[in-house]
Length: 225
Image 1 (tube, rainbow, N blue to C red):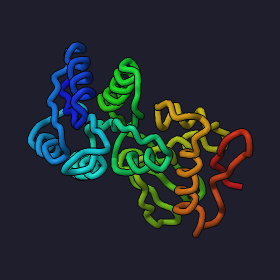
Image 2 (tube, helix red, strand yellow; image 1 turned 120 degrees about the horizontal axis):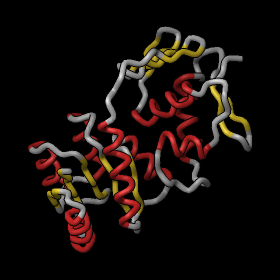
Image 3 (cartoon, one colour; image 1 turned 120 degrees about the vertical axis):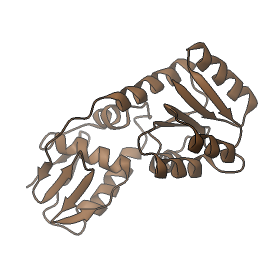
């Protein structure tokens, strides 16, 4: 693959560049966000790996600007910031995955394989998902409730799609982490609760009936009472 690595720490950049090259990837390296943005805009990449704290232009802003122009290229954020709020900001900026330093190189390779595998899966026409007056179109990426279009972030959309595909079935936090994030967040993290609350505010607060339910100690379920 052709990978753009934007990392300002020389030792980390050198280590990752060497390791990825040994895995037969072609790696372009940028040490600041502005150069990273120019390279991303000028070239065609199979994957972007971005540090969060970058000189010139932050990794989050770089991610936002790239994502505004290319909705399909996988983006993996690398950062020393491991708090839940930091992870949410990265995912909301358009990142597909989030890896906290320090990390094992083999885990990085596993994340890369997962991201690129998802990108190259052949999309197929899918039926619109429905529950009460809520609809989700997986192809057009449109969500409506009572005929009103609801704006969701990419992560909110993925979570809602998973819940709808499993409507009337309780899904655990582990289920959601494995199928929506495909990542190794600490199961004690509240990132799932945060996103469930985001969906409730957008989908349940101003509508009836309520569709998202919490079963304490078990997980979540979407259903129509």
